[in-house]
Image (tube, rainbow, N blue to C red):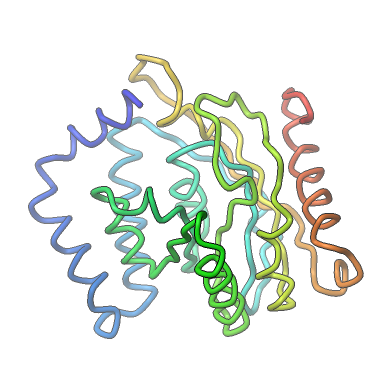
Length: 243
């Protein structure tokens, strides 16, 4: 949390220029291509990484499907998770996030720039609408990040919570590839208790996807278990306990 505030403070001088620019492009997607808006998102992430001495190593980019839409399902560690994936994912992608956390400064701008989805966890009907919208857009070729844990434990030290089977419904509806993503040490950036301003290195592992033919006979409970196990295998390889 201290590093998050530090990064914000150190970039305040950019705010009068960057925030209006982000807001304008976010409000006028008809004027700016998805790629152009995504380039702006990645530029802002790069500035934050440079200021906060944050380094992210990406692995398995060759595993990403070459064509069409897909849904990435990462373990959830904190505020940096989406940023770490986006800076590692060259093609435009977007995400689904909690409605209640989506209206703070910078988060709101990121959501609008990426045309991301806000999900109200307390409104079943609205959540179902979001799932259906994501499924439709993935069918049309968009790439989404969706956290199957729903939330995260502060300073979670690379542990995982339960994966919610319902989060996989959008991929199933779209008959789209499911890409497990293993995040390591992402919590250290903005979601731990350290007062250090030193270098932080995180990892993003894009794992081999599950194509529709691989999972079409499985229930969402079984898919959730399989994806969690694959991510857990990577965490174990790096010395972290299997959940």
